[in-house]
Image (cartoon, rainbow, N blue to C red; front, side, top):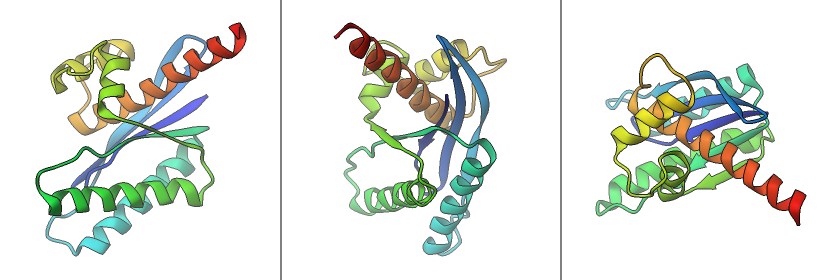
Length: 164
């Protein structure tokens, strides 16, 4: 199974693609869709939409996992983040890819073992779990963590179905 993880952002939308083979998680691709902060915001949303569309076409994931937005004290930032997330979600919906959503707490719990883990801890565990030569850039690492969370959730759901 191929899983695309997405960490939405209005400046950088992180993505990570992994393949789940039994208990093995194999990294296929990761990076960030960078938008120009000086560009008009609708154009930036279009770049996110097009970038996610291209990644889906390139890797043909079976599922997409997206990190839920956190609540910010800055309403303008939260609104932009929500719109960036929406652009990524619409790309997945248009292409008919099943979506799952996870909170940052769930992702950190699945990858590090506790929901209050620091960003650096997540990066190091992603590096270890995927046997990467070096830690991925922060946004890509977060997206890979979301994909790992989904892969672990699928394993847990399968065990529950098999034993229940």
